[in-house]
Length: 191
Image (cartoon, rainbow, N blue to C red):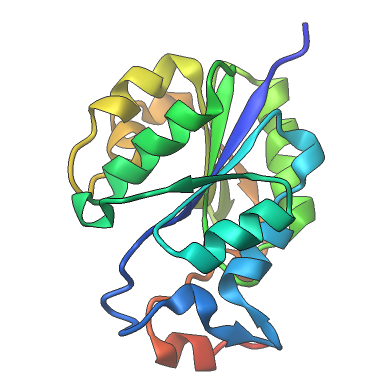
């Protein structure tokens, strides 16, 4: 039986530590958000929903033929972005949550993560390095109710901590999991 997998690209945060819309910041001539969308192997997903507060990101999502979901309340926190994304996916067997500030994440790694989940569809699947979990993460539908109960800035980590026994990891190079929270971190990237 074919299993349907959706993807939520989380691009709604206020980036307070960065000081401005970090998704527009350039890395190697391409913005963080462009790099994030390029890392999504669209053919692996039934639907890709890009949740954001930024009009320019909504436009870019449309150019990729992804669903563009406006988050009118980014101040409600990460849990609100998760809710909007899950609602946009509709019925699917699992959802991949991809953050938009990992500029070195490779499309092939996201594809391999989808394949890992399809081989063990009852489990949560995540990228990792050295056994340390990172993003993206795929949650089977059985965890959607818990994800929808999250509040404020609590995300998938809260659910994973409750279900460590259901977690399977896919090892990738450490740099792929590097996220950018400050301008200094962006400048420190080894491209």
